[in-house]
Length: 416
Image 1 (cartoon, helix red, strand yellow):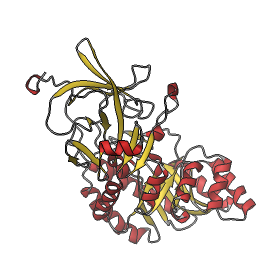
Image 2 (cartoon, one colour):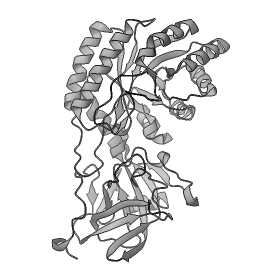
Image 3 (cartoon, one colour):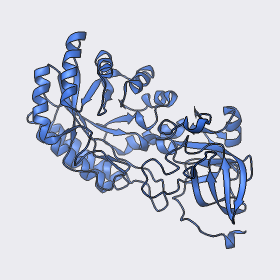
């Protein structure tokens, strides 16, 4: 089958141009893909390009107001080496468990710039947070009561911010984290009573955390959510027991994964945040405004690499069978929140450039039809031994996947 007669089974993705090509191969962190695979020693693996991580932060800082603090939400990718890289680039780290807290502290993050969120913090985790001196985003009356006892027992102050479940959502977000009935935070109408409980427990109130949603590609929706979050925090601050010093406006910045999606234009967001910073200087003069980002900072800097172990043709359809699949990359398989399965951008990493192409499906080695990394995509013609690359894989990859499923080996992660 030649290019002229190639069936167009699926629409095209936005061009992936952050990784260069050389001599027909993808280059990651300055290393050709086949050489990187030899260096890692086996497939499958994830590779994260530290240069791209730094570039994304640099570009974002050039767009956002200087006064905005940039926090990395490490749930997006908690690989220790990557977290260590991010600690040197951003202003703070947001964690969602005591395990993540340990990684952040080991990486050298300043405890004063670590915040801890999550709807079900265990007493032992709250104790660790108080001992470390990090900011706890309290999400229930239970946590306030526990923190009061822990602080008294340890003889240490408990720093807290209130995670508010707002009465609005981030329109067009992939995952809605606020608005309506949610397990996250405290409903806004209950916040005054929670603030009173914080005073009674003797906790150190520092501010508010609002996170309306994630994975949004519409600047106007993000700006609207930021405006509503700021107005809500300003209203709540009137009843706060101390001046607001910390105001986390959340994130929501998305990256393009699927056909038809376009990159987020951050310029309007930067302008909008500039206006909020100016207001905060008058209305909340002691507050640091924080933007919390995970996927947007690391998602496009990573790839997943798996090797073709078999090539099969079933009733005219080509299947490229690889040594890794949904057990390592649940998101790319469509089983991590997608309602209708869509393809991530995929290529054959050692067959870049001109050459014959075909429509093929990339499947993993697992005994389930859900193990599908690419469904009828136009790809370079590939053979056993070639390297399949899944782009946009720097966030919610290895740590968000069931690596023990069916007993296949785990994947490796490298920072290059």
